[in-house]
Image (cartoon, rainbow, N blue to C red; front, side, top):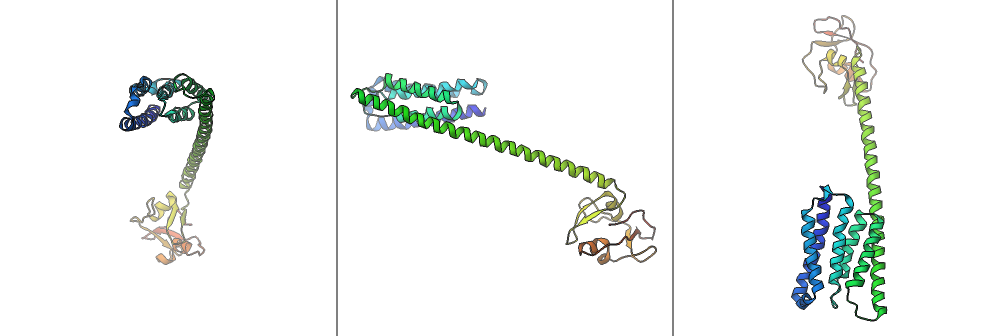
Length: 273
């Protein structure tokens, strides 16, 4: 569906340019429509646009879409039959279209097709040297334009693929890091020793299940109702909050093992670090 929308956008932009030019011709030089090839070119643009909007391009093979810019190039070729209105610059649209979405052979083929329409339908007034000069000017200009756009499109696609691969590599590295972190957490939680990591401000950064069970904490570090009390020695006195292991670790001090038990003095089977 994305390809269909892209084809629609390109064709509608081209058709909008043709409509604007038709309005200006109608306002300033309506006698131009007496030329049957000019009328045929405008009618071909309208028919091509209607067909483009009706066709489900996402269901068709990719090369089928080349028919649209080639028909647009033919329509512009018809309009160049007007002797005093130069609409050949509109060939820029189909050439850029081919160079953006198709390979270089299609670009060169499109330029050759445009050259044929220029020879067959364009106004041939002037000397043979003038006609040849116009033909060479169109071919060389469109050739340089097509090659430049094609190279830029290839570089843009290559850069997009490179960014996509790097993004995939980053995502895989993040997945591996998350998996490793999950494994480390599972191993630490399986230990019977209470482990905790605190910041310089005393905020708990990480802890295992043994610490949560011993000190009554949830997974986010919030204190829960608990009977656990930290003592300074066996059958000693309860340690105030300013002297607990967490408080001294946060202040940068050393921590020696303390006894932790319930408020009734029953000893616990874990240690805090």
